[in-house]
Image (spheres, helix red, strand yellow):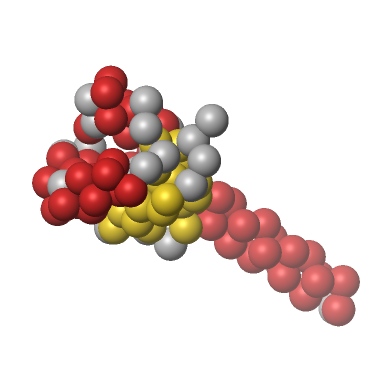
Length: 104
């Protein structure tokens, strides 16, 4: 009797795992992973791109290094516009933070 019960439990576990995997596949298809650098290249000009470097992406926050205080000020002033442009492509990025740092 315990053998039969164990077999049924294994079937339930197998079916549950299959459901979870199907759910994960559906989620991944709905929100395919975006290439952050390609997205950055879509929203910034070539001139702006020469002055930044990807730093991190964590919990919806995109961090970028900027090579001078002038560009840091300029990009911070453009933050709302940049977020609006990013929003046309994805809702994964909720904020952008700029840091003075090496870009080479």
